[in-house]
Image (cartoon, rainbow over all chains, first blue to last red; front, side, top):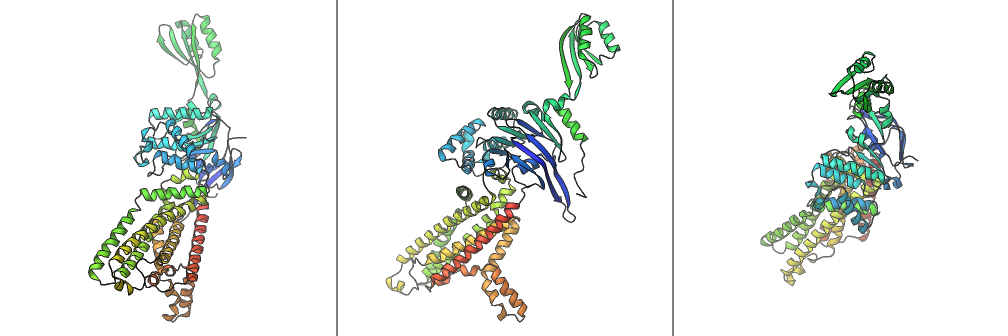
Length: 320
Length: 268
């Protein structure tokens, strides 16, 4: 059973007052997220990431398609007890303190007073809110509110947690703490589904990602698979490289660029069409020694930018 | 039910922290100031006027609280996006609407109860300022338990007004909700006049229309028994029961409508 599954999940809005026309916020999203994964949901602004999360939280209702969390339909209260959600740029009741807010949300899960006290104290420690926990939230900075938001999302020790831009508003230290927390949740067996613009976070954290552009899914899968297809060449670092060997390799087209790092010490860029083992053996036969051989793959950022650039832009379906 | 209770308590906490109960201070000041002034100006009418003023003030303060908090109950949650985290918790949408309503009802109950206590304290004090002969000509004793009947109906009227404000706030802006609620309250206060429209217009169609409207629109005048209570006129129990049932049905209909709209709403 998947943690999250969607099948042709679609959301249209009607825009315009005099002549309303449909606007496709999400177009037939089919997605499966396994249990215990950290899943990155990526896309530029307006791609439909938040729409998807709102659909999964039933804050909005789909035009068509279906979705399940933990094998149950979205409206099921059993599901709600087992999930957590951090909205984008969260706002909470600013007349409450952080402790009171978490206590309130804990009460909605039916926890008793003692259990709530225990959970609230532990959670606020976990997200790094100290003495400020007794201040009203109206006195909190954006980063502090984000931490409270994360704490409220995991107040029920969820099996699946949805974070919408969890790093937003956090300083580098805060981001590192959130990354650590997400990995900790994963280690506990919790599925973490998060949307982000910050690709380095996705690269660090995710086992799989999906990329959404213009309401459409343009790519999804394990990060290694998505990027492995895009190996662009190899970087070969050698010492003891003679000028003759280098000239010969360049002439044969085995080396496209050579960067001198020191005396007889070179970083060579090999084209993707070349078999790197052959080049290594040719050089070592001439007395060179191998330091490293690294495939040059595009980064997630390169991949993302390319997917975004290639995706169709038109989201208005005049004849939908 | 527990969820509704937790949401209601949170609304009450918000009202307290937003200093809604400060209105009690204004009420007490008004009452004490008025009783002093009236004591200087009138002879023997103090108690009756303070009763009139006190009951009217309870209704007016309550009305403003009901409307101005009622219109923001749902709207604020949506506008400030706090509803996103809330609806992701194991609660049903109708529980949120009913919890919000119950929370404001609790705020109003505390407010009306405190104002009632303040009114009785002022009346008890005034009672000590008069001789037995002066008291003998009053239509009703100063500290009259019968006043609670009028206060009970005022509270019920406030619950109906709150239900209207909440209903409008599920689909419109606070400004429009306030305008609609106040308009309906004013119309409701003059509802009995609609039934007598045929006496002042010649067109039978207009008279039928006015009579029809009088049945559809709320009749807030029915909740007003202040004069009867102050002058110790009889108010039959059957009237109290019928009016209470009328208010309860109205509230139930409005809350059903609010829930129906809220259940289908997209929170973009």
